[in-house]
Image (tube, rainbow, N blue to C red):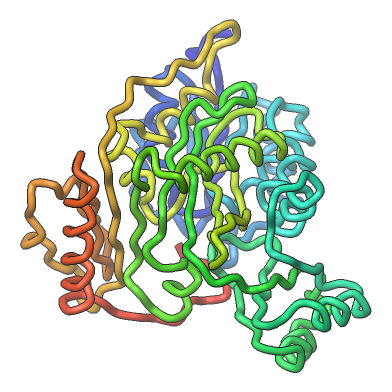
Length: 402
């Protein structure tokens, strides 16, 4: 079957994946999009989409049984060949549909390892990959043992949320039990983890036939949890190539993704380096990184992760995926909530500025250079200016809004 004959169903409960949709159309596919009713007015790349279908939603949440029934009805007249989740919150939806319709790709079990923070930790620990000490919020005796043997502070994490959403720092057992009382029957959807102070990193990978064919190691300026909960300018940057930490992270990431069973696609995986110098696995996903990190990676490498993912998903039988020629620059991205509805970032005009964000109440840009030190200097200067000119803070909601 050629890509021209493929019908691909893309699932996105949030506003994501425009370049993926465009690349699927470039490959000659029939492109179907299933998205939230509340996103009906979004300026999707409609020239690249053959049909858009909307699911009724409450804050982007769908009735899964209704979704299965709706797509099954659609399949009476559409030969759906591929199903792809464009956002972290859609991974289970896509897996459920693949299982129900018997369409190839990641099923329920493997999807758990890329969505469920507990499942991925349990497997990583079994495989000998370092993870912070943790306990499932389930059996009270085991929780008490954890509190008695693992020193505070802790981090309470929802198993199925993405990024820093819903995460709470816990300072003692009394505080934990009070929060668990509030959670009631929802307790088992959480895990408790030892808080480790240190720098946080992410490795973004392209996987084909169970092998990582491209990976970029990056370092956050501030931990995402601190940015989200305490209010900071968000920043991340590509790491110094050939450094000891970069080499160690790339190796650890390869071991992890092979163990978790990702066959093909994109992964965004986070790690922390403890004060003793040891790297720990934090969490992974089977999707392109959020926060416009894909734009930063493209500036640094020339590789667009959304487009390459689409090429892999729409690959013709008997054909082999070939990674495009990459470049070797350094890049960083800055993003801040802004007090202005349309912040003016025109004065950030150094030649290294490779991309600027166009989003209400947000200021953001990417800088790119072959010189690591130049990026360091620019980001330091720009971060200070962002705080002075744009910075605004809003408490993180319990669920993402976009």
